[in-house]
Image (cartoon, rainbow, N blue to C red; front, side, top):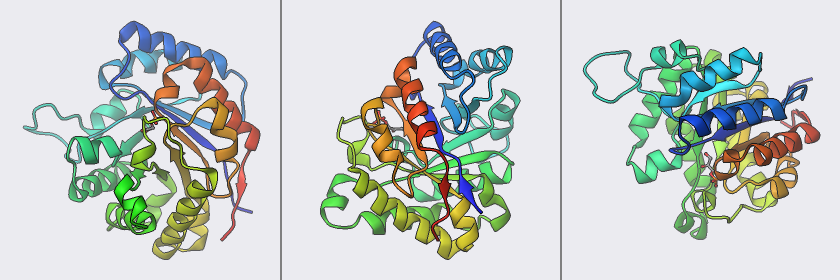
Length: 264
Ligand code: 13P
């Protein structure tokens, strides 16, 4: 029977310094020693990837190294960009695309999100495609429509053989960094709808295997209830991932909930 292991990511965003990133990585690694049944990734800022990679390696950790962004282009005259090959060279195995801060603060449109998602999966990396509605869209009853459109546009021309490396992160924009969390029922409703869209695109079996994380003001105190929902397969954590003890507690909550059976 298909089951989905929970997956928890720590998105450090543009935070930490070199010493802080090292201390955080060590704290997370040490706090999770011996914990099983959950996949974990950390997404440090680019300049600290190698530092964190060497800490993970020297401690024999299974925590994956993630990148918060990547270029869709292989190389060339693109000042400031970082390619997927460079990231892989630094030990990265998973890449975020479509994060709401890149979409709504930095102005990345669907074309770029799509190109990055397609390129990351084609480069044999795992990809976490982030989707989510803004507050006015939720209030207008458009949550499912917005998420569906972002999933469909982000995955255009992504072949079925690549989606086993795909995770979706449902991150309602109004819940990110605001202390406002979607209720477990709201997260479940949106994520159920997203799974239905994935089933329409790739069939029930593939959609049953793809993990859908929730992100937006997840804390140790609310993690378990969110992760217990049938279509919530872990979380993408921002602010609370910057404190090792808090992040470790969230990962343990996911491990405690355990794997989910397919419901399609
Ligand atoms: P917060 O957990 O700080 O709300 O951020 C969520 C997020 O954007 C993770 O990618």
